Length: 334
Image 1 (cartoon, one colour):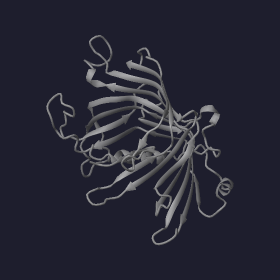
Image 2 (cartoon, rainbow, N blue to C red; image 1 turned 90 degrees about the vertical axis):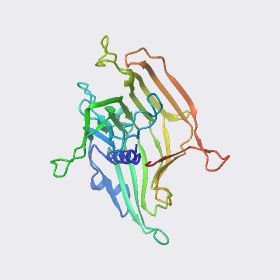
Image 3 (cartoon, rainbow, N blue to C red; image 1 turned 45 degrees about the vertical axis):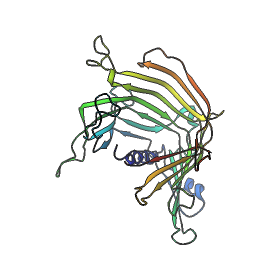
Image 4 (tube, rainbow, N blue to C red; image 1 turned 120 degrees about the horizontal axis):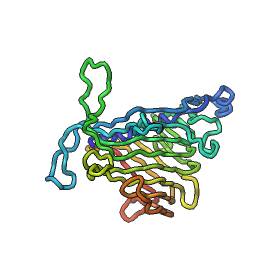
């Protein structure tokens, strides 16, 4: 895809829309939160629904190779990743690709004491030295229950013409293949600190917190449409797309029920022939993973069992022969 930075932008939008609440903080609560000059915000939105989300790759994949070769099939024609409703009657994602609300599990154990989904404390500071001024945003986020509908790939429609009555571009529903049947993410409470300007903390976004209850991904289905035949409805002669379906994936610190988040997120600018990128450095320590209910072929196939990984630790090398616990992820265009 030409601009993987679009994925980072979508992620940042998702983080921003997590600033939701069940009730707004009153003046007394705001005063008790800070006790000093600055700005405190409790944002009062209890749920966000997104009908459809599309990420367009305007030049597609360049044509190369021969039929059957790895990477073959490109036509240099615009395509899109599409997140849309799953059409299942009564399901939270029936008509909405993304639904974000509070994680009410365990009688509200994963919510902030304020019952806001996000509390922000904003301060500006002159810093020390030349060009050292910055804004500091301390964010506390309640646990979230994020439901994502069907995810697929499709041909992109043409850009709206000049004078169009709306800005919707959309996709061609006749040229669409589902790749994920959907998933649900449940998170616990977490903190983040954002600095814009000089950023003396060393990164634009710094996470150094513990997500109470860890991270859970539920109802994850990965689809293979290359095996589909006929209408794909599962009747005789109309084989449905193959599916790998997982009931639940839980991620916590090693030997714990919580998840430590230690990440520095920086936006690296253009330098010489390098056009810049987003860098995420994670150093949260060893993790435990538990994958429950692995189904091969279809969601209704018998489970092959569960899989458990204890004490998973990744490393990155800042220099040859040097191994540092953690991981470095970069996101850029190509």
